[in-house]
Amino acid sequence: MKKGDEAGVWDADCELTFAAVKNLLTNHPVMNRPLPNTELQIYLGVSYEVISAALVQDASEPRLIYFVSRVLQPAETRYQLVEKVALALLHASRRLHPYFQSHQVVVKIDHPVSKILRKPDIAGRMAQSPEGWSLYVDGAAGRASAGAGVVLEGPGGFLIEQSLVFKFKAFNNQAKYEALIAGLALALDMGAQSLTCRTDSQLVVGQMMGEFQVKDDQLLRYFHKASTIAKNFQPFIIKHIPREENARADMLSKLSAGKEKGQLTTVIRQVLTEPSVECMALGAPVGDDWRAEIMKMMVDQDQGVSLKPVEARRLARYVTIGGDLYRRGFSVPLLKCVSPDQAAYVLNELHNGICGLHTRARTLRARALRAGYYWPTMENDAKAFTAKCERCQAHANIPHASPVELRTIVSPWPFAKWGMDIVGPFPPGRAQKKFILVAVDYFTKWVKAEPLATISARQVQSFFWKIICRFGLPQTIVTDNGRQFIDKKLQTFFQGLGIKHITSSVEHP
Image 1 (cartoon, rainbow, N blue to C red):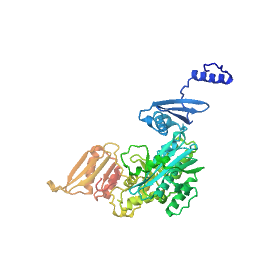
Image 2 (image 1 turned 30 degrees about the horizontal axis):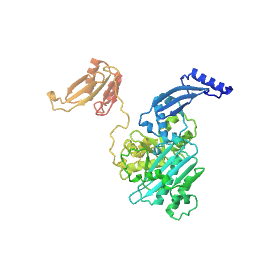
Image 3 (image 1 turned 180 degrees about the vertical axis):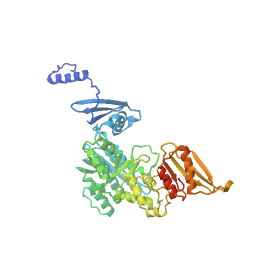
Image 4 (image 1 turned 90 degrees about the horizontal axis):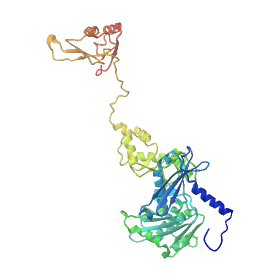
C-alpha cells in the first residue's frame, strides 16, 4: 500500500500474496540430508559483486541441501557474465565436492555454460540457447599478414570474441569468407538456432543471398562450405553494414600483426595453417570404434538424459575440439583419442618408423602418450605389437631367466634334510687325501665334512652312516648325479632305511 490521496483496494489476491510473504518470513528453509539414488539440482546466482549457489533436491517436494556464496575480488568483478557463471559453478564444485561425488548433479542456469566448460578451443560448449544470436565478421589481408575477426553476441549479454591468424597467403575476399565460415562454426558450436550475420563485405553478402554470381574457383569452394553450415540455422539472415558499424570485428581481424606470446587478453586467438576449405574432414566414429560410445553419451547428456554416476565421471575426462575427441591427461594437457586402425598406425610409426627405436612394450606405450595419443587398450596393444616384431626377436638379447617358476626348498625340522656333495680335488695332503665329502643340514646349516683320498659309493655309505648314528634318520637326502651317489648299492641302502634320495643339478645339491 502506498501513501497518497488515492485509497487502495485490498482484495483476495493481495491477501494471498501477503500470507505467502508472512509464511516465507516465518518458515525459513532448513538444510536437509540428501536422499540416496536421487539426483541433485544446483541453482547459480550471479551479481556484480557476489556469486552464489544453492543445492536442492526435488523428490516429493523441494529440499534445500546446501548454500554457498562468495564475494568477488576487484579483478573478478570485470569478468563477463558467462565467465562469472563459470566461476560460480567452479566455486560450488570445490565447496560441495562430496555431493558431486555421491550424486548426479544437474546445473540449473539460464545462461549457456555447459558447452563452454567442455570445449577448450572456444572456452566452452553450451546447451541449446534461445533465439536471437548476432554475428559480426570481418577479414583483412595485407602484404605482411592476414587475419579475420569474429564477434558473437547471444542472449543475456553473452559475448565471444575470436581473432584468426592466417599462416598462409590469402587475398582479401578469401579472408572475408574465412571469417564468415569461422563465425558460422562458432555459432553452431554455441548451439544457436537462429542467426543474423553482419559483415561489411558486399561481395560476400551478395553471393550468399544469390544476387552475385561466384566466378572464382577458390571462392566457389568457400561459398559451398559457408552455405552448407548456414543451413543449420533457421532462419539465417546475412546483412551488409558499413565498416563503421563493424569496427570491433575489423579490429580483431588486424590482430594478426600483434605479438603471439605474452598477450594478456580474453580474446580467443586461433591460428590457421591452411585454408579451411582444404582441411580434411574426419567422419564420426562408427562400427566397433570405442569413441562412438563416448560421443553418444555426450549427445545424451546435452539432450538432458540422466547418466549414471560412473558414466558421468567417465565422461568428465573427455572433451571435443573441432569434432575430434580428446582425453584429459596427467602429464600433458590433452591426448587425442584415435580409432583402432589409427592406433595400429601410431604404434608402427613409433616402433618401425624413421624415428623407431624398437623398444619394449612399456617404453612404446609411454612414447605414444608423449606423442599425444590415447586409446583404452594401449598397454595390451603395445605388448602384442612388440611380441610380433620379427626384428626384435632376431636381434634382441637372449633371456637367461628360467622358463618355469623356481621353487624354494624348505626343511620341516632340524636334520630332516641333508645336502651332500664332493669338493676337490685339492693338493694332496697326509695319506694322499685330496677330496672332501661335505654334508650340510638345510635347517640348521650344520656342516659335516670328511677328507678322503678317493671317493666311492662304499665310502659315501660309510660317511652317511656316521651322520645317521649321530643325528638320526633324515627324511630326505639331496645329491647331484655323480656316479658315487647314484650307485645301485647306495640306492638300496637309502631305500632300506626309508630315506628319500633326490638328485639335483650340479650347482644346487
